[in-house]
Length: 477
Image (cartoon, rainbow, N blue to C red; front, side):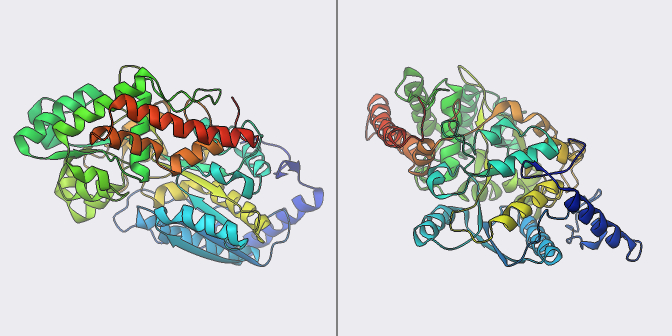
């Protein structure tokens, strides 16, 4: 954190603002001897949690706020997060004089809601989604001032998040990305141990070998989606990157039609034939969670949420579930971030100032988001979650063994942004949200086209999307 003069959206605070904040803090401290932090009531902690819950901190907004702040975000896969977030947001609103309204919907509905509100020119003031929102760049506010202010307070933002929320061609931050979620492999130890992999697979070749034997000997499939949903989008890109393939290069030039992409598609065709069933073509974002918790899948690529669910609903499965980092392919070992916390402020927002101040408050307290999401949410400014290493090494929420999540302390090097090795541009956003990559894999795997033809057809789609956005001046290359 930078010391010295406090800053507000990239400018130094005036002396009046500094004095007003100090006076407010002093007044709060004088009431009953309590600190400013303590006056915000802490949310209820999970009764099974151990360890100390982070305290909520508060900084007086730079300007007087009023009116409404309407927030739309997904219904978190770890429900305790939403219990915490709703109370946290409303307590902040009461303190600063803003009426905060929080709405949650299923994550798959968020893009449709955003499009409808943008078209109507009204709706929520700030919206959170768990993947790139770059396709909405022309219709949202530039949040560079917010990112600059956050970075002036807490240091350099994680590149993974920065590349997922900004457009280097325009210099615009179409979103604010204070957090992300790793996407490890989840495997059932009791299934993988008998086939010679007690620590789970470490490479895509080992995944094919082990999953094939498990399906043959124990009739349990693995679950990697090839459907029009977010998890399929993520895992199939991870496979491509690990084979040395990508949609674009670092200069935003389309590179999809390559021998490496064809090899990745051929690999998935073999994996499907030997270890999966047609269910994966109708996968939704909950399918791998549900299948793992029910004991019907040997391996999935997912966050820790399915395992957290199993801790309560099926403890035997939870204790049998372990994790591995990104699998290594012929060229790399990379996984997409499972979830990316991208917040946008549409141009129609009437509460933009309150939205920015709230997002700073939320970021400053990201340790609480991490804790109440049961270590699901990771921060883009690591110094704001100083205890995460201890939590991962000694899980406050009952992992068996307690250090089951310790490997996530090193998740950044094997995690990549959508659009890797380039940025998540408007074109990448459209490719992602029209499911070009899952459709490419599914066509080849189902035998509707050869791997070479499926890849060539997909590149034509991607190139057309890039050409459209490049003509609008929103894509480089």
